[in-house]
Image (cartoon, rainbow over the protein chains, first blue to last red):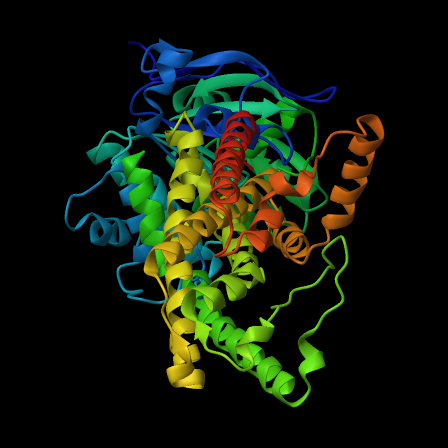
Length: 304
Length: 281
């Protein structure tokens, strides 16, 4: 079995509108697959079809090498968090997990405590979920997806509503689960920077069509990091950069220059600019590669 | 399937709606008996007050018709239970509970956590139906017990038990009818994804607002086949709940049992079909 999950011309049509159009996704065991697309691109619809929550209008998918009705036998090995977490607000986090454990037949003692610890909710005790913050609800949603030790976990915008620390914690948790338990993840997100920190593979979807699939290495090869220099005199700064032997640079606007080489020489560049009387307003190494790449691929600035 | 039933049973006893419904059953049972007592007291002062105008069709509304014989004589346990249960109060609570319980998973999105793992999603309906059946059983027992206790407190020695078997037959038939009605409301709630709509529909049906529709159908049938003695109300769940009393004949009881079972089975099948064929939101 080369792939854990493949879709074969997966299509979902609502009336005349094709929300998902003949999508072919390929995911290997152990991948963290980042599904990238703007709002309404069809990400959630794809994830719902793969999760068994929506029926494809055309096409099908293979799961663990099985297709069609045979694949449905393996649906119990998929954990999902689609859109907002589905939780009973008048119950505690543990009670919500208990219900899922009962439904899927998990009887192992300590499972609930372990799951709560995994997502950082071990201290919520009997607090009702309706009193949780959005981030806490999101973590509980992830814990629910992890009930039953699934092989494939589908997370739709899992870091929505999380603060920076929460995002980092969830990222670490997912990477840890991926590494230690070899859980395969499909993660959709519009926070591309964050996705780029954990995804090993990417699928870029636009208007229901899968534009491209690539590995992290392929993406990195196509995109590059850069120094973003803000200065009070770009003309003079360009002369200084050329004197330093820097040729790969681009003047973006009246006070910003992007430099694509010698990324570790920020200090030298600042010193040389100062020696030549050019004031440095700011200098940072930026990595917006994924977003830039996405924008170029889908044709312009969009609500990613 | 068995796991899903365990899940819904766990949810049943941890849901606020379960306990609130049971509390309402107690309150309404007491309230209903107290109001009947008020009617009896009034009738003692003015015997004509219990005589109601008789019409061909039952009038819309939720009411308990006190037996004029209760004014002077003794009050039999089965009689009072039958009268109170036929008022439709318990049916309303059954409908309200079924609508809330069946739709909760869809409303809060919890269904998304489990539906995908059960390719035969119809089993989600069966587990809910089992939980609702248990809750209605508890509601019926509680309603009966509270009614009996309240009557005993109010009437003491005047309150007596004639025979237990007819009460059991009556309660069994009414249980199936209430279950069929709850299953129908469960189907409405799955179909419309609206708790409010399903509850309102249930309350209106219990209050007799479907009777004019039945009258129109009866008239149409009579126009087409004048010799046919047909009353659609005999085959509708709400009319059977209000018509089948302790004194009902075996034929009527059996008809009620069939109506309850058929309504429950058809509603469950339709709800299973709906949830299976429709995408989970």
